[in-house]
Length: 275
Ligand code: KIV
Ligand code: NA
Image (cartoon, rainbow, N blue to C red; front, side, top):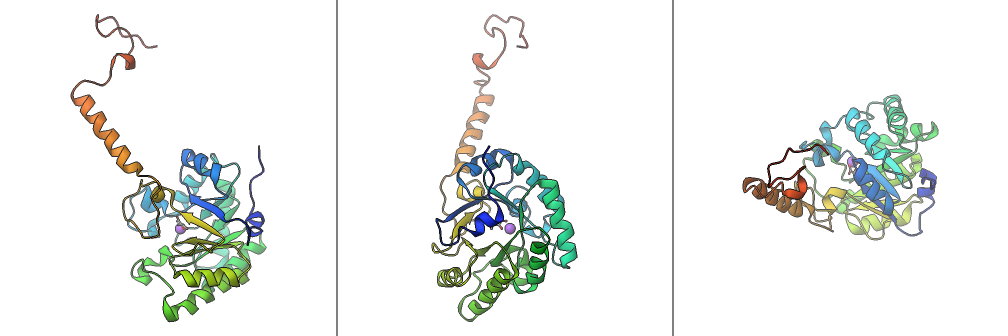
């Protein structure tokens, strides 16, 4: 069994080959992702992707723990990171520590991710000093959808300085890496060159130290929305729909089950065995 990557291993990849990262929420997907990725993120995007929630705001710690436990069983080599959901860390460093410790002890993850820069710096330092590696997340932070008023690009023009400040706060606080989501490409490039922790881009820049996507998005499984930054590597929902349609027709027209799917001899009406 290979040794799993740690937060420090990921931090040490700054300026090396790009970090390959994807989300996963279930054991079978985690197994596939683990084969090719350095980081497997149990993102709170699970709320929208698998639970049909309108945003990530309604995701609970219990949901993250349940999906974290499922992913843990499929990951051997990658660093497993679990998102802290909205409401589980913002109130105080104490609250964040209690809940991050639960995520670690109950799921076996080796790091957590939380959204926010300047206002979360104290908390990031608090967790890191107490044995919990933290991945930051700045730019478009989806848990703030209600204060942003949507999911538009963050850090355009003058606002670039604010995103730069958020990234600096996260890096200075001791995070081992930081996700840059949906910010202008030159800004992502600048943040990547300015700070010593790896940047992981999503809608950011090829210059980032790594890239991440929601796995269901890149597989074409989740059709809820189609952001510009998602490259579709497959159209699995299309294949699934065709398969379900074919099954429906087969059942309706008594083509399924066929003789090879049943027990005993269908044609002579013999007793149907249970083997
Ligand atoms: O929840 C999520 O999937 C994420 C990534 C897209 C970075 O936070
Ligand atoms: Na997230």
